[in-house]
Amino acid sequence: MEELFSSKAEKADDAFNRYYEISKREFYDGELAVEGGGTFDIQLEKAMANPVTIIHITSRAEMSYRRNSSHIRRNKAGFRVIWIVRHGSVRIFRNHGTCEIKAGQAGIVDSDSPFKAVHAPDGDLPYDAFQVVVPPDLFFRHLNEAERFLDPFHLDSAHGEIARSLLELIVRHGDQLNRGTANSLGLALLDSIADHLRVCNFAMPQRRTITDQRMAEIENYITMHITDPDICYERVAESCGISSRYLSYLLTAAGTSFSDLLWKNRLPKARDWLVSDKTSHFSIHEIAHMSGFKSASHFSRKFKAEFGCSPREYRASHCDRE
Image (cartoon, rainbow, N blue to C red; front, side, top):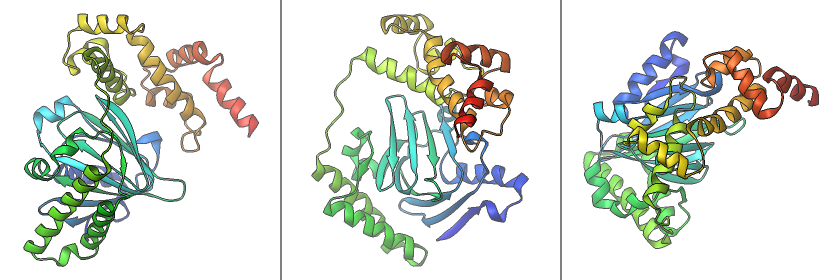
């Protein structure tokens, strides 16, 4: 495989920026971040460039990638990405739902719909996955039915085994294949995944009402942007393609409010970061900022109202139990 990037081969100050530029070139425009203040440690290798692009990613850091409506307007790509995870997991937040692709599973993401992907290692094992970037014409020619699949799936049928074997073959010999052979193997990989989905007859998601779909879009947008201190009512409405009045109607009908949705997502994340091994050494002010609060005092008031103690007391009590 061709090495595209290794953080170990880059100066610390330049590594993240260079990785960001490579990811835009190989995938599409978006926002990258290291979750929880971890150490940036990631490698990219390319196994195939045509007819599909296959990128191998390994990372010891928890990384996130977000592609929102403004990125899509600037850079409409049309690609579908098939994630195939070997170790660790990747959580996908989308307007129509959230899923987690675990080790041994695969999942499909549309690059022209807003999403946030968070990939995480599994203990001492780094995150290890392949991303198969499929041009839109090939996707609809070979995997049209898969457009309906939103959940992760195991490649555990005979056709799935063929897909895994083809991927291994491409990974081992992709840089030595002539164009014709590479083209045949790449298309066979897509066909075997399509056959697997068809044979397994995965259950379709139940039809939801327009109101349910809109609420799912609103909640997932808030989840995807939960650490943004400037997230607001008007921005959520605009990004979900609805008016502020209709957003108010939907929230009232669901028996909730914008602030309730914001805090129920933001505060648990902050609570977890207070005691996480990766972030327990961060100050309360830093945790507040990471969680999307503009001040530590506001964070402390909201935290105490929700959990009955201050962030400092919560951290201290957790440390005492250990």
